[in-house]
Length: 217
Image (cartoon, rainbow, N blue to C red; front, side):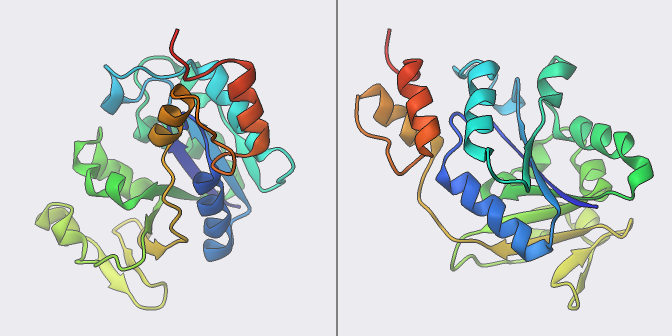
């Protein structure tokens, strides 16, 4: 099995998320993309985040009808701060008998901040990493992002167009269709009473309106 693990706050999930996920399936011939919303993201401890229940419902509505997309509430069930390394270890352990090849999906901005993540060195050798880049992105190599010592453990493999690590897992940089959509801008538009149509799936838009999400009290 080849699964993509797509984490994030998803507050709310939008068309850009869905399009990137679909392209990851095509690029890496994945069997499934698992959307894993963070319950308590460590980089947003003091930020106001929509309750997990609402974010879960919006994801479920957005991916309904796509058999290659699924949802996991593992970070909410685990409790405490949501750390990606713990989520990856959980998934690998749960499916260890099913020959799971896991691809962790994230954007280039998040990857450039990877050294601020918990146990980032261990995380990068647990599974494959697929870094979604924008058109014109200048890939300066891993040394410009990771420590030189750790980056030296990865070797570029032309056959896979990726950096192969000491455990056989790889880090890939792949350009995806750039849709300049952000959850923060969607929240701001909803707060101001502006339309969010065509930024999120209609089912998500209806859910936002029905539950008065992102509107000031």
